[in-house]
Length: 369
Image (cartoon, rainbow, N blue to C red; front, side, top):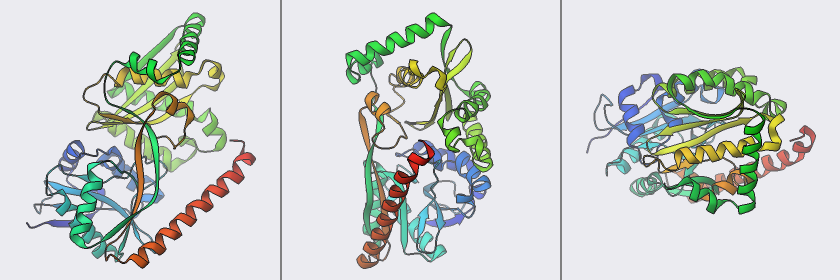
């Protein structure tokens, strides 16, 4: 089997074949689709030098078997990641040849970057890609190991949303949420909307304004406070709405949004990507009420297998409502199978992460969040 490999800018990849791969990839990842990667390359400093490795069965790239966006540091090549990216699982074809294509793409990354170490920052451990990666490493004689692991909340499966919420939440909490929703409705008009297409595009600016008025605005991490992040998100999300890949959930009181959430969609996977709420309504738990509405909308949908919360591990609010978990793993590969070099880099990465956590614990009380 002849495999054609290339490293190219996102704008140079055949877009229809790329979108097809997004839809059929067993570990669907909208963040590695054309809307997000093209926008990232144009606007985010982290993606300024990012290239996309592909392996295809034809020279035109009409049917890629694997697609991996990659950046190069002094010590290793890494799949592109950014704080605005929830998952970095590469796209692979569902065909049996995907492991061969993945092996060819990894070899292309080594040839082009000169790096024998490849870092995969955030990927699902239970997905098809993980199995294909293990097979590709076996073919190459490479060695892979986990750097870190955690589990994050998700809504998995389909069924009756009310029965699901009754089982997930304590009776007292469920009753309190009904009371809060009822009180809001008594004090004004309470509406819940699921917006797609043009309506979702129109609601994006309202979402970013709501986010900036909350704790992220005080912390300086709201999207509109960073020109590069704002341009990236506006372009990527705007494009995703055209392809049906972005919906906006909106809970409003007397017409004004009190909670909003962005849900992204690729294949049978959805991502609860971003959320914001009006803190003046905090006593009514608008963010929790919004998650209830999202659950009611998505849990009965047979075309969705999983809704990834995109939340940090241990997030109390979302884990109380969506108790299921997806295993997330960070992986490092030595393409030569050099255990000494691999173990040394794993130790360095773990030490760096431990230092970041320590610094975050120190500065959090100072910043007040």
